[in-house]
Length: 378
Length: 261
Image (cartoon, rainbow over all chains, first blue to last red; front, top):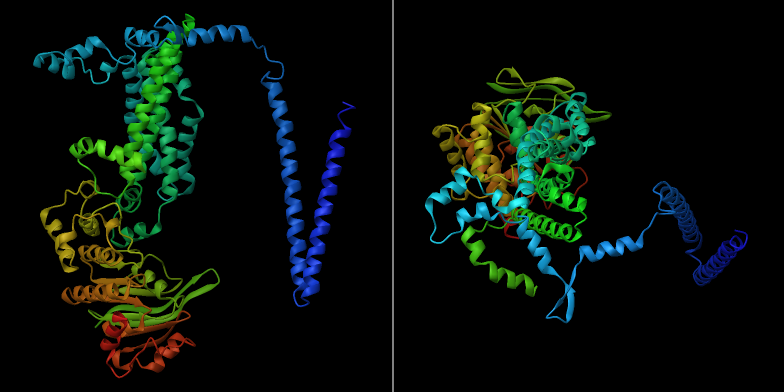
């Protein structure tokens, strides 16, 4: 410690010296300017001095803040046991060879063994369930099987195997949560419900948000058992809290004009809310709902880990078996699922927000190569 | 026959006096233009007449009923249009008449055909029948204002209040919007209040004028009474010669001259 202390003092003294030097050059410059032109001096010099003072005070403030942050971070490191971690590099390196299996291609080139990932993805029905998909994809097509696929097996989500279950959890959660979020969000806005009463709804949503979705799943297990159903209900609950909050915030931003206009038409209170307020935020509400759908699919993975099914459950069980290669394969499937959902939702949102005339589905498909080429050339 | 009776109207916002003891009477069917500089109390007068604001002192009576809250017989047109950008011109027009239908039928647009014909008829009155299916957001400022007029007409009002309806429009659109406004109010026999700050447009379209300065009524008269001295009094030290090109009654030509420049 003793050897350390003098060093910062010396450097800070050097800094001060440098600062002094700079200040003196500055003053000499301004004095020179003053000398050449007598009409400017006092006011400008005074303002210059003011600015210098303010900047110095601000710099001190920043320094203090950084010092405080560094001190606090150190304490947090201690609390998280990162100061003397129980690190086992050897075990981690071993697991990495499990996560990323290497094989010799053509007997000579060592590279990632993608085949083993693909094997588990197809064997575990991670992305595609052949039993259900077989009904749809056969040659020649069998009408009875196609009917069975859509109306008996209800296979639109199940065809995607475990990923389909995770996706369905997020989807059901969003659909079930949306109407409640809409009602709570609208009634939670101060412009719809007068001040103290809107906190009944805001408070309810805060409470729902305070409990994470994974805990809501635990709460619903006694009711619906450990499985996708309790996960979906838990996600719906979570949606009420989060989406409703976004709705409230969005409603704070609206303009008074259309509300006043609807008031002067003699519309009833619900009509004023719908035409004057909600119609202003319709696009924003749809966009937020799509965003929450993205998040809900991710939550679907998380609650799966505690046993609710889908990709999260596969991930957790392979981790328990210490089959790291299979775990990595599941992670790949999760990555694919999340990326596709995000791409879909983002395209839809940007289409909603743009003022352009909407494209028909036919245009959307046939024009794709051209649009792709255009955006690649930009 | 007095239709609108404003008696000793005073409106204060905190310490600011926006309207100071304003009184006047307007018979049915008159086209009244309210003149004055920004901050003279024009908007406050119209908003109080519409029931959006309640008077601090004094009373407003329309059709022998005191005006306390907004009511369907009194329609308002705003400077900022205040139509709903996400809806089509037709839906906006239709929303003027929601006070005649229940919540669900108005939300799902299940009104009867008569109501829907009325909305299209109003759009026709303002020359926008062909643009009925266009999103309001994608329309020009003048067209949006005309949608605002259509919505007010679908309301089937007896009184039409227009708060600076052309203030944010270019001279050409301003003229056309004012034309539609006057035609609509003449055809339907509406008592109309229109606040303006362009003197040339006011002289071209006005019949009766009420002048406000610092919240006080300083002028109340008909077209012939509106002389250059009155305008000078209303607009104070500002050089009004450019705004009032000719005071020999040939205001139409003057207004047209402004458009062409």
